[in-house]
Image (cartoon, rainbow, N blue to C red):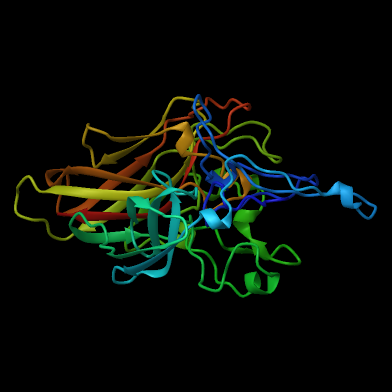
Length: 377
């Protein structure tokens, strides 16, 4: 693969891609593993490059390599620099700052957006409208205050933009020696090592159908906060239905039931209109074309659903292309505290039943959770 457009590449620092086809790609834009792509409609104007590559078996002649002017390209003399000082929220580790196109998180140049992300912290700090002047340095000093909607009662998973948790020494595509020394992942399969291989690799890197959901979770997922084991009872991907695989000739429909979370709440505030908040970060994949994929949250036996729509431009292939860090979305669901009761409560996380209808021409809708929490405010 040739990825020589770092100035203009979409996807940001969490993006990775597939390199297994045996042919040469010169990628300008890729939607694999959740990287966002531009809306190429009337008025779209963007320069990708400049770049040059030459492939031949003989020694190249001088005439084979020529310099050409690239319209819209900004040389170093027309660029400025940016430096930021950030006060991080308590507990944040492995912070990263992304300077991108205004209004986006994954493209660079011009009027800019600044995004700060950190492991173990829900959400991120975003600031738009930063003007970068040619030939000068733009500086900023900010304090990132962590998002909160109240008192946290529990948390499932670690917010790190991944459907698992990596050790600080583990990075994608490093040497095998590092992979072998890494601990197992946070959620089942995920970063677990597959010791059936001579050189064990993380299980999420394998073909997704190798991990047979109907066998591993015959009754779907029922996770009890404080008692369940995240590495056993919570999978790194939750399916709307389980598609046909090399070992299954037909899709398994009706067995991918909603995922249920059971939580015990010892004490609530005095009866009032104080809201309860559930928040989750997800990496969803939709087969709905231009329409949305809706996923819902039920609280106990309340008839009202808490619904969030995920559109085609917000999702992409991830687990089905052996991915675990993809297009990450944040969703917050708010509901009256009266929906909860002292003692045991049930939160049900639901994808549309058999979304896509088992059509082999459509990808299986699924969601990969980064982290979830319940706050009462």
